Image (tube, rainbow, N blue to C red; front, side, top):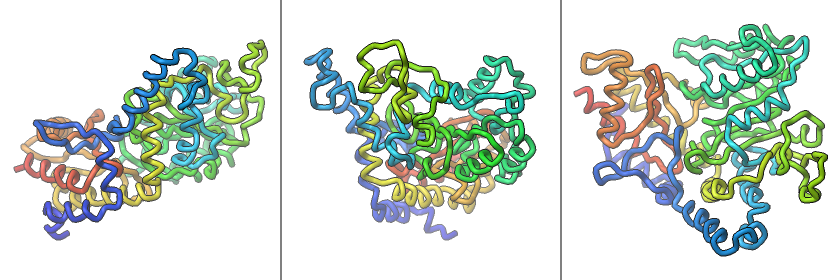
Amino acid sequence: MSNEWLSLVYAQSQDAADPLRDFREQFHLPHHEGAEMAYFCGNSLGLQPKGARAYVEEVLDKWACDAVEGHFREPAPWMPYHELVRDGLAGVVGASPSEVVAMNSLTANLHLMMVSFYRPTIERTAILIEAGSFPSDRHAVESQLNYRGLPAKHCLVEVEPDREDGTISMAAIERAIAEHGKRLALVLWPGVQYRTGQAFDLKEIARLGHAAGAIVGFDLAHAVGNLPLRLHESGADFAVWCHYKYMNSGPGAVAGCFVHERHARTERPRFAGWWGHEQNTRFRMGPEFVPTPGADGWQLSNPSILGLAPLRAALELFGRAGMDALRAKSERLTGYLDTLIRAHLNDVLRIVTPENPAERGCQLSLRVIGGRGLSGREAGRALFEHLAAQGVLGDWREPDVIRISPAPLYNSFTDVLRFARSVEAWTA
């Protein structure tokens, strides 16, 4: 690779040619020592859209002026407020509007989905997940097994990485489903593995799981807003995700849930609450639960209006940019980061995330293999702290991974070059 790629002129020329460059101005960027940071933590907490404040203040003003009547008065009455984000969410995840709902938190939604979709029988009790899954997912799955009196030792199947870089091939997933298929009740898989950044073929996993007779659900915490998703087309039974990462909706933001339309009117068991009751008769306050068709029928309580307000602002930006355009920029931006590391920093950093763009999103997970006479975790922490001191912020995942995630809505080629130059300065 030409050293031209290491020049500020080259990075700035790429930014100038970027059709999405103006979206950066729609976000509040954190500062370090008076200058904008190179912020690569969209996979942990996305930046605040500048439009979020107006929507939050609109809710606060309505509360102050209208009090309980705010549920019914325009603009944006609270009673149907969650419907304001429905179409935008459907567009981002590739679903019909009736298949998605913003509610609760990710793990709460995962539990609600497992109540309905993990229905063990004498023959089928096992849940298949990836080894090293995000702890909250594993805790949720194991607690669901414990709740039903089923031993995790026998009923939790964890697929181990089979590649040198610690990622999992589709062949390994297929083998595991084939081996355990007759006893599988549920395949629960991530859209993007949080530590390695590996992205998976959701449609194929759903096909394999269904062919084995299992229900298939996805945790899309690191995939939503990162990759173009086709949830309806994938055939997945359900999916859950959060909105505070790539979806830029604030810390602890209201989460999201997908239920495929084939389950829209089934009498599948669920934990019920009044906001899931059909709208036409909800306020008759009767004792019988009549679920709203579609994903709305899994709601429990009326949603946090203040929590939904920032999501409105974020979805407007995603709607204007379009997931296909964001993905195209993401491939260029992450590809630039990949090339700089492999060509100029390969004696310092090893990329854990697959090189194939189809198997990754924004995130590259990095291990430090050398520098300053240190090795392993010690070198990784030293580099991570050096980067932070230079205003280059990624995040750290134990035991030894630095995650760098150039989000196409607000990161630039100049940000990526700044990361590379900061790593070079550390090794000097």
